[in-house]
Amino acid sequence: MKKYSRQREMILQSLRNRVDHPTAETLYEDIKAKMPEIGIATVYRNLSDLCETGQIVKIKSKNGPDRFDGNPEPHIHFECDSCHEIYDIYIHDVQTKKMDNEIQRLAENIGAEAESSNIWIYGFCKKCKLLKNINN
Ligand SMILES: [Zn+2]
Ligand SMILES: [Zn+2]
Image (tube, rainbow, N blue to C red; front, side):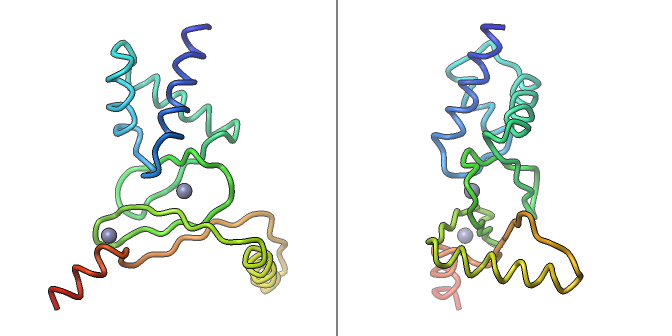
């Protein structure tokens, strides 16, 4: 039981220390360096438990396998269509309120009531946008 919690703590901390929304495999490579005895199945199991307790969030990438987010606070995701990097977008309280009202109104279009939302923006990140402009 003790070993189990220690592994979970390590997985949680490794994820919280990154901002790149890694896949389970990427995270496993990271943790293995510090904890060589850990197996990928343990990483998968703990990630899924941490999602259930709401400490982390599983995010569905448009491209490739699921990614994980160590920050359970609501925020918007931006996925670059070119380099597939996922960026966090944080908005201030006034914008959040406006957006929540807008989402509520959209749900009302079908007579529903919104409880939560998950917003993704796709396009070209700052880096790839610059490259695209240079090549054109
Ligand atoms: Zn990019
Ligand atoms: Zn995020």
